[in-house]
Length: 102
Image 1 (cartoon, helix red, strand yellow):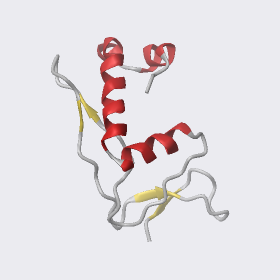
Image 2: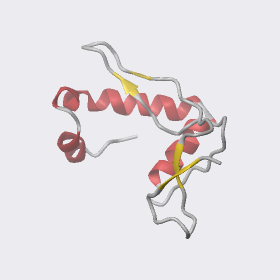
Image 3: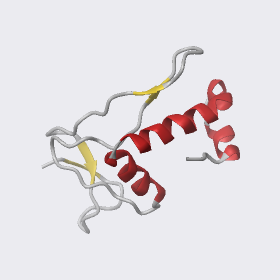
């Protein structure tokens, strides 16, 4: 996965700008490691992509941890639990309005 260099340089914290290739490699490794990683990449690449989750399923948020000059890593995923806030596309909700997991 290649990150857009101007986008990265504009949005990343200054301490991370020089680590773009490391982040790209972490994402590549993540996508190759499991079917879930491939599905995550497919949905993330689609501007209208949506994950539909039920309690107990993994939340599709990739958290990368960097400490000093050490290599970064992707932290373990959290599972969605009753009471987590979610976004719903049902017509009775405006896009982006939060709702509770049933």
